[in-house]
Amino acid sequence: MKALELIKRQEGLRLHPYDDNGDQSIGYGRNLTSVGITEAEAEHLLLNDLDRVLDEVRSRYDYFDGLSENRQIAVLSLAYNLGATRHAKFVNHHGKMAAGLYAEGAAEIYPNSLYAQQVPNRAKEIAEIIASDTLEL
Image (cartoon, rainbow, N blue to C red; front, side):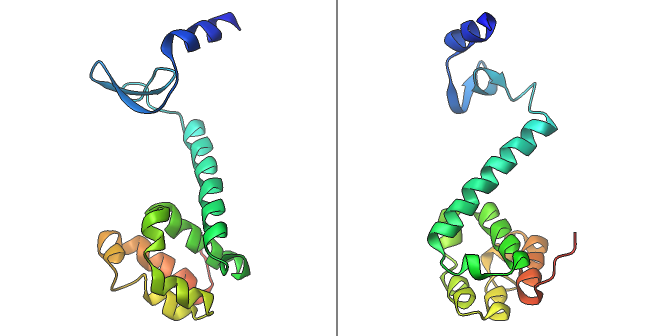
C-alpha cells in the first residue's frame, strides 16, 4: 500500500514515546495522548511482553521449569510487575524456590518486603499462589 510507505517514510519510526507538540507519540506517529491504544493492541503488547518475561525468567532461574503451572504463573506475574532487574534482587526468594521451599519463598514476597508495602494485594495473592499451589481466576 503506497499510503503506508509514504506515511512510514514521513513519520519515521520511534520505538519509545516522544514529545510531539505537547502530546506523547510512539511508533509511526501514533498519538498516545489523544488516540491511545485499543484493547486488542493492549492485548497484543501484553502477549509480547509475557513472551519476553518468560524468556528472561527461564534464562535466569533454573528452578522455573520444575515449578507447577500455578507457581510458574505466580513467578511470571511477579517478574512482569517488577521487571528483570528488580525481580533479580529477590535473592532469598529465588534461593527458597530453587530449594523447593515454597512457603518460605512466598514469605520473601509477602508480608515484609518493600514490594508488599507498595502493592500489598498483588504481593499477597502471588505469595498465596506460591505457598498453596492454587490459583483462583
